[in-house]
Length: 295
Ligand code: R5P
Image 1 (cartoon, helix red, strand yellow):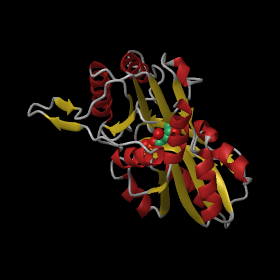
Image 2 (cartoon, rainbow, N blue to C red):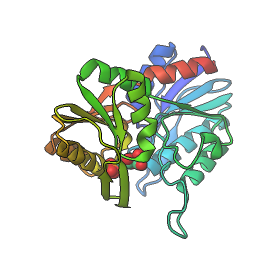
Image 3 (cartoon, protein in one colour):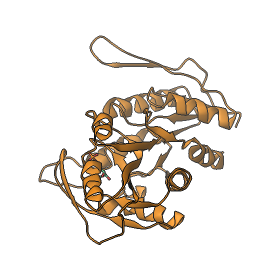
């Protein structure tokens, strides 16, 4: 582990420091600022020659700038003769754009991966939004490891809730909702979602489930605007759920989502793949374990 250096590009500083501490290596901050015209300035103030660099950086907030900061850092590390650059990106942006939904659209997940393939040696991420892609290999040519926060979420539910039913708000969420429910042996149901736009969704029950008087725990990979969770919560309440909580891996919580959900009396819990006040589940151990195996 002597030759390892951990840094971040601004978004995941807390997590990066925690990971460095657990690995017993030093965390080196990068100097990052902005030129008056908006260009990114980036500088390493440490020797990188023959060192392995781990960049811990979630691509949220500011997904585009995050991506560019990572690329600038990786390319600079190579100039400075680092032996390897590993990106530990707890949240990878653009993964939901995995096909041309309408003619002429950019399949941005492919472009994002192409950029990383050319600058990074290896990528590790947590619960990437794999829907139409079977695995990260569909877009990454570099070694790409996918970790899952499912066990940690399952443990949290077991420890904090009683008489709960797990709800997956859409078909894709079975990877989280059903899998977690199986692990902790509680009932689960996956709803059917129709998305009309980024901010307009409708969800329907597909199979009946006993939820009256119980706690509905909505589990999804991402909460972005919160509309999906709000619609799922409405369905659960219609069926008599006593209270509603929503747990996600990646709490993007944009456009005032956290406040909207609070107003709807939905308790929100997220992992710390993205720093947010709703972070209650720490995923640092997952990354540390994966990074230890690499070294
Ligand atoms: C999409 O398929 C994801 O799994 C989430 O359900 C979605 O991103 C949530 O978006 P929002 O919070 O904006 O409804």
